[in-house]
Image: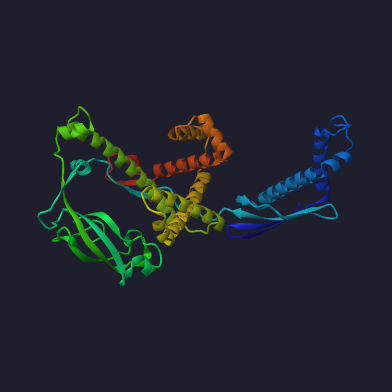
Length: 445
């Protein structure tokens, strides 16, 4: 074969010309296979003349020959140039020439090329997994607030710690916020019956304290300077004026922390037993957080240590998937389509950054796995699939068929490989911190 490859960043153009004798040989094999299987009226199977078979299945033979030659040509080009191919596009204008040769051109997506940074002995700090009494007390306070009652206040003005139920509209430079920025502005377009706790950082910074001293029925213009971390970039750093009307004032009445309260959460149990349950749950959460901290620090250090370009098509696809996932989660949390539209630019920017990080991490970990000879056995994949099926509450065999139909088995295998590689990096990291389960071996690694 005559093969030429023009490489670019994460892509290559492959031109292949298959000589006439190779084309003829492949075609002969295909025709032979058709002759043995073809059912043609008037002839016993396998006894029809070659010319009749060729004429009857002309299009099918040509299509199979084209596919076979393209596949073999691409495989030879990949082997010859030692290409790390992620995807091969359909050939452009494949051509059977007059002299019997076959030629085609195709584009392939290549894995990025980079030098691995030092990945063994990475220094990571891990937070403590110890559950302090203060942690338990904070959880109990949260439970108190969750089961609190609210009592109306009618004989005095708003005080710190109260809850104000308010109606408000908001303006920017004298115009409704949505009109001023030219797009939906979410809750900045106004709300009725909105609850605000009278404390510094409730709702928006400095909003609640400005309501102190007001009574039911009072109105007030409250000015808030929007911070640089606000989701809608168009209003960051601006002064929004809220026209507020006080509809109700309420105080929060917390239930007493005693055995009776604990019994509502754990029937026939007391406060001490409730504290024990909370301590166990917090311990599990802190352990998970410590493990996540290890992984996050390793991934961050790897990404900061090396930079390389990524295939644009992959970044675009990953970004789109991130946008869909982020939008779905936001709507599940109560955001409307208008609110999402108002944050479209921020959503796309965040999704794109996450896509680059995810892809870089994936390529880095796969390269480390290759260098270290980390393998994934079929049993590893089956075990992960069984876990996934259990989480989805589906029969394993049915779930496997669903994955096969979606061509997703390889994704599971890759996920297992990434997990094994991360475990390898954690085992070889230098861990410091106050976590109880930092071992001397890890510390000296």
